[in-house]
Amino acid sequence: MQPATPLPSASALAPSPKVSKAAPAISAKPSVLPSVNPKAPAAVPDPQRPLEVAPPAQKSTSAALPKSRDDGPLVKSPLPAEGSVNGKIVAGFPTDVIEAAPASALKSSSVSPQGSILQVSLVAHSTAEPLAVMQFYQKQFAQLGLGAAQAPASAGSSAMWFTRGTDKITVTTTPRQDGGTEYSVFGILHAES
Image 1 (cartoon, rainbow, N blue to C red):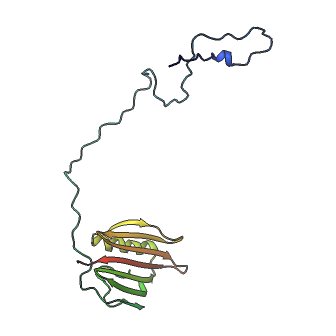
Image 2 (image 1 turned 135 degrees about the vertical axis):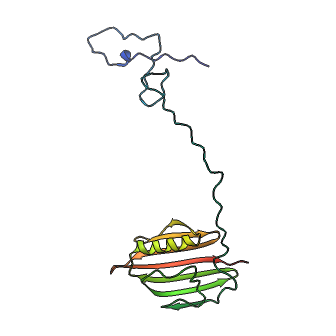
């Protein structure tokens, strides 16, 4: 390990006026540059700046998280035959899980089974504002034990995912220029195998 090279003093680094003919003196002691970060820890304790220490974390009073709901499947076998219809609810649509929001006019609905999976869709418009439509579905799906999360949506629209186990429902709302809301509900629901 090589010994540290001494640093010149601050006065030796400052430009000197041209009147002096003597060379600047170099200190034999290395200079210590002061810390420029006032929040950096001090090398020596400073009673004027006491340490900030967070209080200890409080212990939880509950022993465990509540158990997840086990309500069984949202749809049951046998699943309905494939179908779609304009202007109303198609036969076999799971209206006990997904219903149209209040003050809605249906554009289309469909069901498509594959094995124990039922894919469903509902497209409608409502005289209610987008937030009211989304709140309707949040309340409806919360009663069924589905959790909610924001979902990506195209510009001008908003969307939420609702999930429980392997079941997933997506609701997308878009404000209409003449007032009200265009919305779609798309779900992938699993029956017992």
